[in-house]
Image (tube, rainbow, N blue to C red; front, side, top):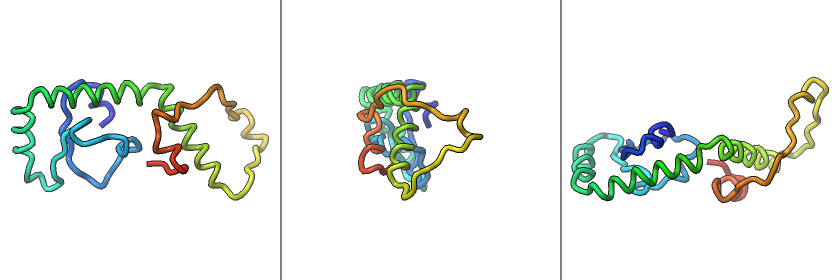
Length: 127
């Protein structure tokens, strides 16, 4: 769904138990218009979007803004770093960096933007 959010068009998304890492940050009728997983209401949802053009345009703009804010290289790097830091806090042992992995060691380069990814900092629980 992330690439669709950059299209600046209204997204009509089927309700599904499957989720990408950012879905918990999205809100129905704010970032997308939901329809049931049985597809019974799809025509009604499309008609609602047609009758409510201004609201549909706002939803598209919100999704686009979310994509620009959350899917930049820096924001995705922040998400990965926050997720790994949350995982590190759950460890019950101190990891050791072996010689063969030393070339892969990454040093922090700045402060992470936790306000962009609030679900990660919240108790270390990741979506």
